[in-house]
Image (cartoon, rainbow, N blue to C red; front, side, top):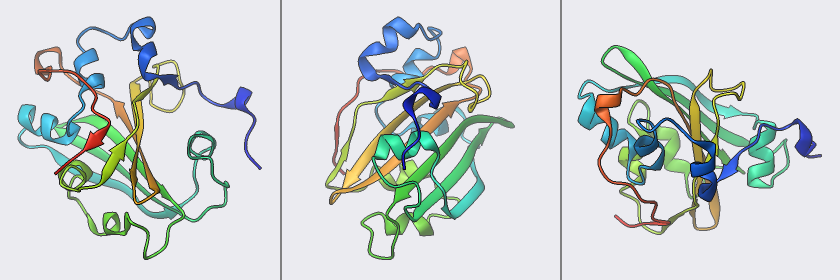
Length: 184
């Protein structure tokens, strides 16, 4: 049984970012279409992936709706904090529903402290959805802007949600855009 939509946090489609009015200094981070990890490493060379949770778990109601799956679907979940300059810069949550050993995303389980982006952007045959946005007034994200998108490989989804926790104005990434296909 899926949760009622009126109890879910609102996620806004990619075209709505202008009307949501994110801070101008945060906008390039939100729109960055390449590896966010690589961009962060360019600003904070000491970037570390701090594992918060890795293993099977339950999807949130928003994830159930976004992925269109049963809430009891066996799922792999990886929650990390990306820390640079002594502070958490981004929090990320990766979920892979319908988890089993032959899932096309099964290698994600062996990443350890390796950034997902380092591995993900080397893969071929991966399609990415448009970004969706969540505003700071949403409870999960501790007052930070969030973006999420789904990567699909051989028909299997991987949902990646990233909360922009502490990104300095001076550390804006150059370029914007959002390709929907990844190639190695």
